Length: 398
Image (tube, rainbow, N blue to C red; front, side):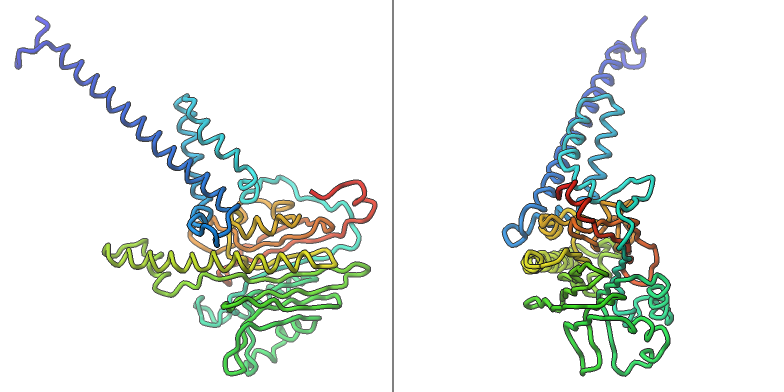
C-alpha cells in the first residue's frame, strides 16, 4: 500500500520529482524573463542617450533612438507582466519609462479637448506637406494623385503653406491648369536643390497669402536636401519660416524590397542587405547632425520669431529633434495635438519625422495630421496666434 506497483517505487517520490522539476523550470523562466527585461531596459536607456549624443561622436546610438517606440512598448509590456504577477520588478521598467517621460510626451499625446488660443486676433493657418514630387515616378498607381494633392491644398487654403520634395517641370501641361495657377497665384519662395535638363527641378517651396519681405537659401554640402527661410509680414508682425528637408536615407528599391520581405532570404543575402541599410542610415544620421547645426546657427541669428517645419527624417528621440528644441522652440503637436503623432505612411504607425516647431512668441493650436495617403508622408496643419505683449509680460519662456 502506498507504492507504485508497476515500478515498485513510492508514489510520493515521483510526485516530488515533478514538483521539483516544475519549481526549477519556474525559476528558470522567471530569471530568463527578468534577464530579457533588463536587456530592454538598457536598450531604452541607450535610446535616451542617443538624443543627447551627436551621431558624429557616436553614430551607433542613433539606431536605438530610431527604435524608441518599439522599446517603449516592450518595456510597457514587461511593466504590465510583473504588475499582474504582483512582483516589485514592475518598478524596473516603470522607473525607466518615467526617466524618459519627456520622450513619451513628445511621441504620444492624449487630449480630450482642443486647445483654445489665448489671443484671438492676428491668427493665421499653417500647413506643411512632403508631397513626394507629386507622385512623379508613379509610386501610387493612380494618375490622379497630383491633381488630388493640389485639390487638397486648395481646399485647406492655408495662409502659409510649406511643401517639401516640390517638383516643377517647365514643359508640364499641368502648369496651365486652374489648380496649378490658383496655388501659384500667391506670394512664393521656391528654391531648387537639383535640376535635370533645365526642365526637371527638384526642391522646396513656401507659399503665403501675406507679403514675403525677406528670403534665404540654406544649402548642405554633399546633399541634394535643402532648407529655405522666408520672412512673412503678417499684419503688424513678421515671422521667419524655415522650410526644411533634412538628409534622406536614400533607400534603393532593393532595400525597400528587403524590408518588405522581412528578411526572407538566405543568411548571406540578409547580412549583405542589412549592412547596406545600416551604412545608409549611418550616413544619414551623421549628415543630419551637421545640417541641424547649420540651421540652428540661422535660427539664432533670426531677428523675428521663427517657425521651423518640414521633413526632418528623424524621430522625437533623436539628436536632430533635441537640438532644435534646445533653441527654446515649442512643438505644435505637443502643445495642441493628439494621438500617436506619426507622420510617415507605413505598416507600423509609429514614426513621427515631420514637424512644426515654433518660437514661444507664437502660440499654436488646433494641430492635426490629416490621414490622406497621397504621398509617403501625412500633411501637418495648425493655427498660430501671436502672443500679445501683455500676455508675454505675465509669462516667461519655457
